[in-house]
Length: 192
Ligand code: VGL
Ligand code: ZN
Image (tube, rainbow, N blue to C red):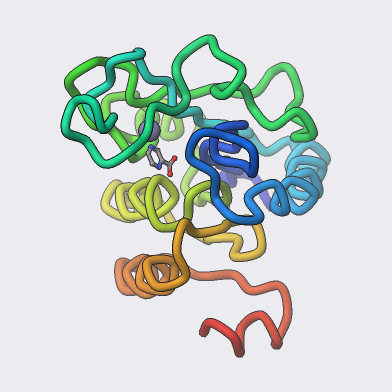
């Protein structure tokens, strides 16, 4: 990472990990990968953004209200906390999203002011990982591309809710201009 780079960690919260309300299979497996990226960002003084899904208890995306999801990531509950092993420094930028009852926000750029905040810090390139690849990571990456950022998706630092939608998300993000960064040839052969 170099000046003008930022690390964006999407929704690595207990409810999206095994044992949570809306678990992504193997979701916790990205934590050690992200911890290496956090250390690297620190070493190079790159800003770190961590987003969290931060819903009211009657959020529009919940099944009770006709939405797609079981209740999850209710603000100030344990399920909404970052995974305990994620080594987030104290002085990062935390972005809450999906915070109002009637608005369904998957992207970290939706109603958060994040694009301007990044521009204010002269950031033009983003390295993105987190959960879930096929929902909030995808929406965040597509918005970041639209906002004019150069975007790199850290493949080993994401997991999808389903394999099919995960593969489709990778294709959509690539078509939108994002680079998918694979850890090694084997990883690329399986997906690229
Ligand atoms: C997410 C489903 C519902 C996510 C958020 O962070 O990927 N998925 N809300
Ligand atoms: Zn949500």
